[in-house]
Image (cartoon, rainbow, N blue to C red):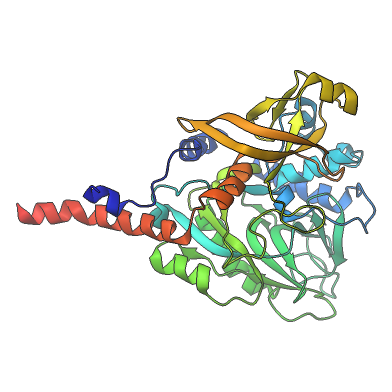
Length: 422
């Protein structure tokens, strides 16, 4: 084995263009600056006023199923871009779920190790629980899950989050936090900050957002124990530079919540709505109870299952934008099952597995199982399908991540060593 092969054990056969898309995302975000203040104000108003699409008792979809990017339906996409409060209040059913899923920044699943992991990325242990937006405004606080349903309506110590004696704050004072509600300790763990006291952070880097999150949240008193004007406790999660010690701390360190994998954020990434390769989720059995997807009965099926969307030309695609083609469904199955364009269909991956050529999917052995759960809003993303495939066949291990960091450190030392010899 060549010496460089020993030093770079983390390099794997290419099965995706995730690294290339990471680089493109960093370039595009500089070109696509939004009116961040208007976007934050619209989102806050919509979360407070939007009617829930389903009964409050309806269970939220699991994180595993919802950690996907919205599809490319043009009408729905147009709805979400410039939605005002009046339009938002008219949304019903799947449109509510799609609209809310578009507002969150959703991580892709880590398929390959990012370049410059130690220099350009943060890492932290993701809390297990319900992902939601929390908005405080005009003396009240509301949390909404990704399907649009209200999780809690409560007073909080966030700015403008409770009606107290000295007033609830100006109309311009509001906050939007990206949180995970942890049932066991009834705590909102804040994983990102979208707006604070009327100041939008959409166009701020993760490095700045995390700095503000830690300083402002503590100053507000939101981290204090619950009280009459503060029903639930908020807490920041410990975030580390993704060097060797930081990755080890996130992976093995003790936290007050149940872990559900690790989250990686590029330090230069803005808060990008929808799915982004600049935020990544990774899991193994040591840091998550939910590594391999389970079926409706909570059991791990013998074959990997995927959910794909049926298009009008019989094509089966993922929820990515642009969607990734997995194959075509037989016309007889479509006719006999009464299927229509836009249906979400469940398949098993047969013994033929997935085949790749130069980092792109060439062939998938799909076995039709039936329609997906009606609560689903989107098909699976390509990164999720590949991560689940890798977990079953050739998982990306914590040692691969550590080897990537160590190899990068060795390469940085090499030039200086050579100069010293001269």
